[in-house]
Amino acid sequence: MAKKGKDIFNFAARPVWAEVSLDALRFNLDSIRRFVNPAGEKRKTPRKVLAIVKGNGYGHGGPGVAKALEKANADWFGVTCTEEGIAVRKAGVRKPILVLTSFWAGEERRLIQHGLTPAVIRCEQVAALERAAVRKGAKKSSVGVHLKIDSGMNRLGISPNDVDCFARQLAKAPHLKLLGVFTHFASSEVFAGPQAQQTREQEARFFDALERLRKLGVDPGIVHLANSAAIVSRPESWADMVRPGAILYGYHVGYEPVDLRAEAEKQLPLKPVMSLRTRIINLRSVAAGDGVGYGAKFIAERPSKIAVLAAGYGDGIHRSLGGRGNVIVRGKLAPIVGIISMDVTMVDVTDVADVVLGDVATVYGTDGDTVLPANQVARSIGTVTSDLLCAVSARVPRIYV
Image (cartoon, rainbow, N blue to C red; front, side, top):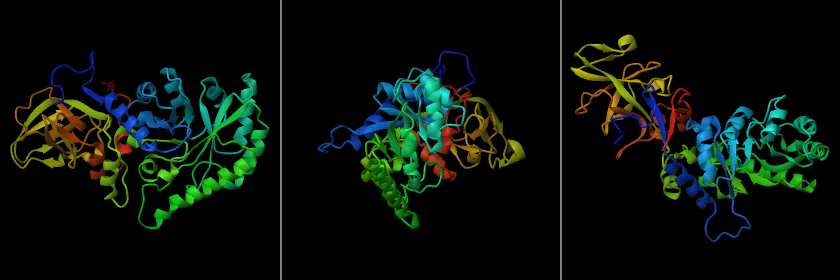
């Protein structure tokens, strides 16, 4: 059961925190690495793992989880933007960091200064990076880049028809070195309906573009395609490196059809990494017929004990959980009642024995033998797990245990 005495961190703070299990994080990384490097497979080198730590590490604290994952021998890290990459680098991470969504004009100098590897998504970016490398006095072939190919998602990346353009530009950029080529799947978790064929079509377009690049004399370096869903379900896409996101933090994606989830969990067991916790800061005795919270959206049908939690949607408790969700208090589920406020949430603890001021409420995660998984909470309100995890705001301390 979650601790009820002193806060687990040693400073005076508002009583809300995200507890991040480094053991669970390492377990997931090790499980993924073993899964994509099955015993008996003949490869010259094991497949690498690029740990996705974008979105502040899916809400777990990007720099913090990156440091832990580097110690656990993650090979690469993936961030969204230059600022995220710099934050991870300043935390002391030395391994390569790929800026997945490329860079904005003017960021080239900072990318090079902090040793970040940008994704090239348009041909003209090659010349801009070369100019920046020259200005920084970089040595030849010292500034690494990855090329992103748009294989059918129609979002980011060069078209397969622009491979020749990229090869020509790269030949004019002696200070740059192509370290890898990748693409991103739109529907790798879907195995039914019209989208089921999309991933195979993306694979075919990508590998055709890759072959064209090789014919032009360009070594693609590390080839990577597989996101979380493809890691679990599409071994043909594993290539040289995989990019786990949600599964790294303990959650399988929503497969279609849904009965594939049980098979995925059996093939690749994972442990949820984060528990979002807060404390009861007030207890109210509410008479039958009284309203609770904004708009009195909850009306007590019986004499009730209502606990006020020191966290709201400003901390990451999804507002749509009001009247629909639960939290764990003393090992039991207690329903969230009324409208969730920015800073507080009300729960009905009438049926939870011996509740006292200061008790811990777990919004999702584990409390002793009771588990309230974030993916279950997300499904109950019609969103994805990543949305829930990334909603944990910056004012919530991440505590690594």
